[in-house]
Image (cartoon, rainbow, N blue to C red; front, side, top):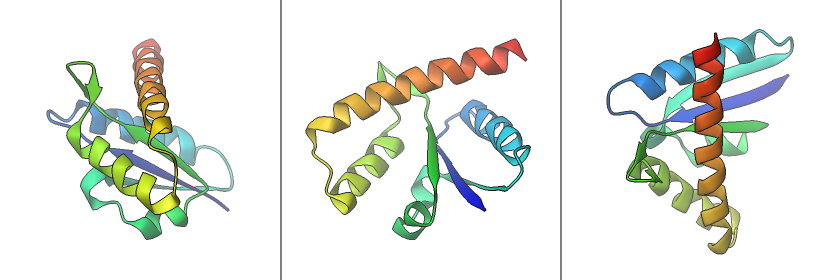
Length: 107
């Protein structure tokens, strides 16, 4: 079974709604198990136990939410990733967020 972790941060509940919509799509695929968690509640064990991690964040002044930034910094240290790659990862988050918004808007 493939385990997917969906992590989100939200101020007004909109990113949570998107996370739940994505979770609904993930569970429609046979052989997948999904867990949706608020960014501050995610543990190292959650990430290690997952086959895929999807992160959703509102954007504040062109940057991801502070809770998602804190999460990414925690796991960069945990997995020994280079800090330089963090900027590219954050850019990817923005692109994923824009794509997810378009997908939800189309449905």
